[in-house]
Image (cartoon, rainbow, N blue to C red; front, side, top):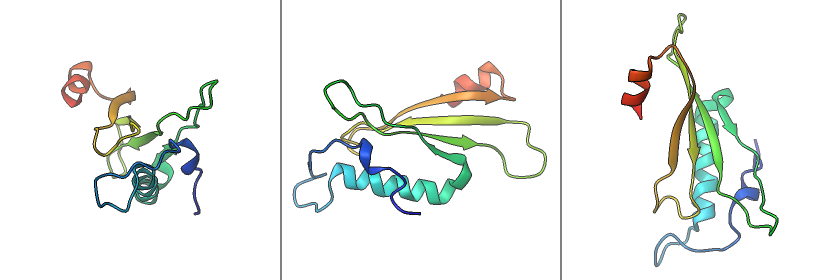
Length: 111
């Protein structure tokens, strides 16, 4: 529950998504992170923020542990997501990490 520490990673500027929009980039990202955490639960990991020496906040990074539903699980992969400060106008960076049970060829197809 609560904030989950999402707010501390966002740029402090209050740039709005579009003219006439009442939601800032950081508010939208904060809301989307809360939704993802509620959907993925224990499979959602918010990576700690790292501030630069000049106190410039870095974009949010999360990991979603993906695995098939069911008893016999032979495949797992972590989806790493890094949201730029102007997300959703700019798409997030995505990567697959900690891949188990997939061939390199299949991983490349997913990328």
